[in-house]
View (cartoon, rainbow, N blue to C red):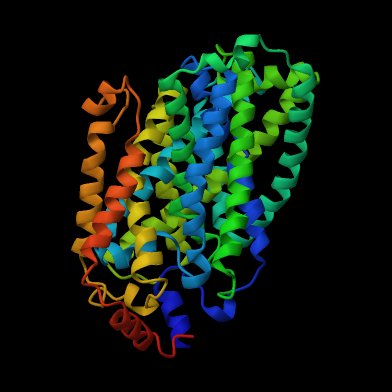
Amino acid sequence: MSNGRLIEKRSIDYVPLAERHGKVWHLWPVWFSGDAHLATLAVGTIGITLGANLLWTSIAVLAGCALGTFFMAFHSTQGPQLGLPQMIQSRPQFGYAGALLVWAVALIAFIGFNAFNQVLAAQTIHQISPSIPATSPAVIIAFAVLAMALAIVGYHTIHLAQRVFAYLMIALLTVFTIGGAFLIKLPPQQWDPNGFKTIPFLTELFAAASYQLSWSIYVSDYSRYLPREVGVRASFWWTYLGAFIGGAWMMLVGTVAAAVAPKLDVAAALQGAADSILPGFGVILLVGALLGLVCISTLNFYGASLTLLSVWDTCRPLECTVGKRVASLIVAGIVSSVLALNASGDFVTEFNDLLSVLLYLFTPWTAINLVDFYLVRQGHYSIREIFNPRGMYGRWNWRGLVAYGVGFVAMIPFFKTESYTGPVARALGGADIAMLVGLPVAGVVYLLACRSFNIEQDRQLARTADLGLE
């Protein structure tokens, strides 16, 4: 067995150069489909539920998606260069053991999103078949089992399913968009430029940005199979266009549906808006969006499995087996199902709070990770040393940990959630601009901490350590 094979077996999911394949454009349908589902649609309803009109909510959706997807797509470019899952790449910035901090954040995202996905799936099934309760435990658990089963099948099946589903949703969304433009009639105030409201606008904008940014924790999990020759520009744009178009389009559908029926839940509003275009089309669109929810829940369970195995490997080295993968998926499925079964009926408020918390947790990490990759180490890492607990990256990297802590603390006065409003957010009337503070603070602090960093020495150490790897 070659050294590359040894690393692959030991390191959960390193992909050697000899096994890289695929085309860079395949990233487009993966991330279009990753956004074309009911949870994304729910993000687009937030501004309307807070009292904004359709015009300004739509502008907030587009701006938020553009902002969040920008950072997410830059993470995608790391996959072909390193061949590693996204979270493993945090070890050079935070240390072998220090990376457990960001992995805990990732697990909150994976499991939290899937809990909300399960609740939303039950509401959707109830909308399609009213005899099934909207909080049916059987539906919630069955949905989780289906998504886990697809995650067990693996990466290649997920990619194929995402491509097929992308074409289906493009067709359905096109029918809704064209039909809605001619047949959905909304009152003039929904298009009034004077209807701007600061709090709903900023809440929608940063909810959309947070939602798109949240894919950063596993975006390179799906680009790491591509050949290393794939350029940064190509992987960035294929990821960006897929995620931005899928995310913004689906959120805008949610915005329109909420404007048509602001007092209904997400599934009922979508069905009502679609049926006003073509009788019976609502159920078809709901089924398509529900299939997308299964796909993204599969990605979340897959990501949770990789992260749990990485945590296990950090605490006690393991050899990854099918049995351990299945066990990690079952753990993630049980936790998300328990959360879903105990969720309240106020879906939109709780979902918005989750997005806010994830935005606060991800913002310092994304700044540190991107600054390290593009400015400090400039893409030069040792694969072997990333998996060496006593290696060149150390167990605890004070630079990343301090920068994360400073960036997070700097955002606290700007926090705005149901349970806590920071003093600056309160002074701004409840506006939450924490992301705009956390990104530059964490990035600059990390860059300053690396002033004494010897990039040439680091590159030489990385090259020496990886001699003969492939």
